[in-house]
Image (tube, rainbow, N blue to C red; front, side, top):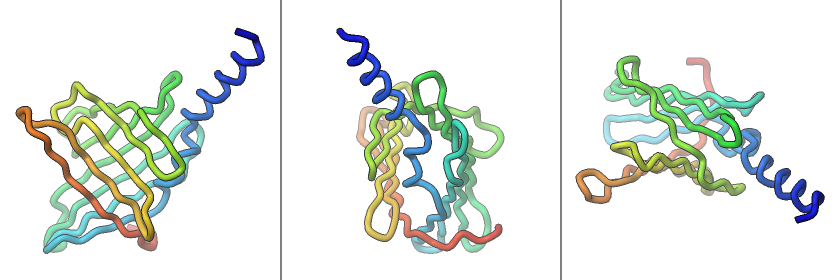
Length: 151
C-alpha cells in the first residue's frame, strides 16, 4: 500500500473520530410525558470533548439526573454517562457517525447496550436500547429544541 493511500486512510479515520463532528447534539432539548419533563443540554464540542447533563422533573421536582461526557480516548470517541453520584460511570464507544446520527455501544453493559441520537425536523430523537433478560427493550426520547436558559 502506498504511503499516500495510507495517509489518506489515517486522515479519514482520525476525522471520523473528531469530537467536533458531534455538534448535532449541541443545545438544549426537552420533552414532556404526563407529569414528567425531561431536559437534556449539551455544550459545544471543545478540545477533545463535550459535556452534557440531563434531568427528569416530576411534578416540578428532580426525580433523576445524569451528567454525560464525550471524549476522545486514543482513536475512539467515548460517551460516559454518570447517573447520580452513587453509581459508577459506564462507558460506550462510538460505533457510527453521520451528519445526522451518532451511535454509542457497550455490549457488555446490562442496560442499555446502545445509545443513539438522531437529528430530526425540529428536534433530536434519542433512544436507549438493548436486551434485558434476553428480551428486547427500548426507551425513546423525542426531544424538541428549546431555548437554553440559566438553570
